[in-house]
Length: 407
Image 1 (cartoon, rainbow, N blue to C red):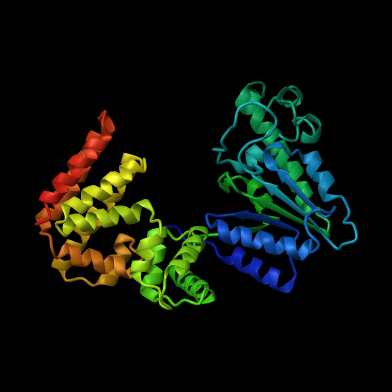
Image 2 (image 1 turned 135 degrees about the vertical axis):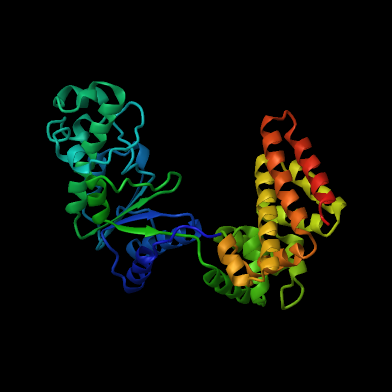
């Protein structure tokens, strides 16, 4: 699907640094592609700690429990019989909340200069290493510019800002022997770039986004892994594997192993893939709507029954079916307008060529009014489902309605 632009510059720099053995002192890792992230974490470990992670030159911390004092101590501990030390920190809230006690807060102020320099930090309490364990200490020592410091949210904000200044000082003076890696694992990477303190922190680090890979890269990667297993796969079937697995590389790796073991031929077939690959919900929903368009109501009902037995959330099933029906309506409009497939794919956010071809082929079997009625039926079912005591019954009724609209 069409989405926001991904920043690949940090990833490209990391690849070169690992290749040239010129790793930076400070990294921030984030992104949805866990396979690539773990692969490069492993490469960094191997480069800095070739003898393993059991020695003195590797430290790992959980960010939720880490204080600035502990971090400073780890950073300033010299390596033992090695050139560098590696410090990994998982889920440290650099940009969002302080660890000084009390409730979480969200940074929504746009006046970055006034919030950073007006005195709430300079007049505020001292180091978070001294008072970071107590929100009351921070609030009692702060100046009058932050009137909310004695209450939960204002106090937490002052604590977090004070901690950020300490963190910025630490980032600015990292010794050359340190490789410090902040890893966003279970929390989201959402820095508020409107605040100067956050942009200053980011400027000190090499920020690497491990984004979902583009189709060209995934096709090549899939092909290479099948070749390693002594198998061949066509470009079209490689795209099909991306589609039915959702494109996650960890998932793909497991499915490639299953398909390679199952296939008796040197060339992997679509039947081999369907036989052993576990499809994601969207792919299953596409198969269900394909069956409806083809007039195979029994198959569509069987697929729906299987999804419900797997305890898939009815709202998610309905969303996937509705999306397919909207794309089908767009395909019908496209056919009647005489527009090309590439434009259809771009406008509708469809990234698989075979998927667009299938949608356009299915649209030829339905009338424009039928496609519109299908989309309307999905909308009505969404309204009913959210207020129904039996959402499963709403889905069954929807599939029955769509079966009658195929012509």
